[in-house]
Length: 318
Image (cartoon, rainbow, N blue to C red):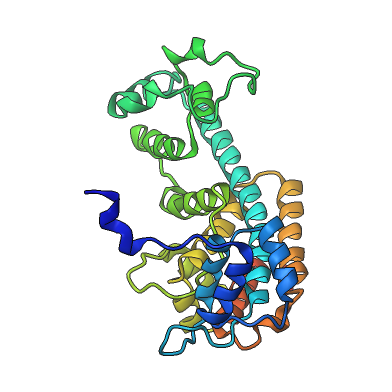
C-alpha cells in the first residue's frame, strides 16, 4: 500500500507559534496559568507538544466539537514536570528492587546444596534459545563493565548469568529457578507490576496522563487485600476502584514488594523518605491547579495513603 493511501491520517507539521494557535482554536486550551510567551519557551526548550498533549487526557470535560473545558496549558506543563520527577524516583526504586532480587537469587543458589550453579542456567537456556545469542548485547556495553563476559557465555553460572541478562529475562529466570528447585517463590506474582513501572520510567513514558479505572485490568489481589486489611484510612470501595487504575495498582504493588525485599534499612528509609517528601512537596506545589479534577485528587489521596501505610509517614491532604 502506498504512502498516499494514508494521507487522510497525516497531521500537518506546525511551528511553535502555530501550535499555540492550534491549542486555542482547535483544543480550547486557555493560557491563564502560563502566558503564551512562556508556553512557547517551554515548547522550544523543555518539551514537545505531541508528548505534552497526552496529559490532556486527565481532563474529563469536552464540548460537542471536542474542545476541552477548563483545561489550561499550565495544567499540561505542571503535570509533565511532576511526571518527570516521579519517573526518576520510580526508576531508582525499581532498579533497587532488581538489584536486591539478584542478591536474593544468588544467595539462594549459594545456600542451596542441590544447586551447582550451572545446571539450572543450562536448563533455562535450553527452553529460552534466543537469550544465549544476545547475552552480551543491550545493556552490557563495551567499556562499562569490569568483567569480560565473553568468557562466561559458553558455561554461565547463576552468579554471572544474572549480570548478563536484562530485567525481563531475569524475571523469567528468577521464576524458572524457584520452579526448578520446587522452592516457594514469594514475589513472582507481583513481577508484572514492577516490570511495567520500571519499563515506563526507563523508557521515559508519560505516566501521569490517565487515572481512569480499567474494568478489564487484572489488578493485584494480594496487595489489594493487604491494603483492605491495613485500615489505611480509605474506604474499601475506593481501594478496589483505585486498584483498577494500572498506574495506582503498580505503584502500590511496587511499594509492597519494596518494603519487604530491600534488606538495607538505610536504603529503604532514605528512599521512602525521599519519595514521601516529593509527595508532600513538589508534587502538590501547585495543587490549586487541580482542585476541580476529581480523578487527579482521588489518585493522589490513594497513592499518598498507600505510601503512608508502607513507609509509616503521615499524609498531606490535597
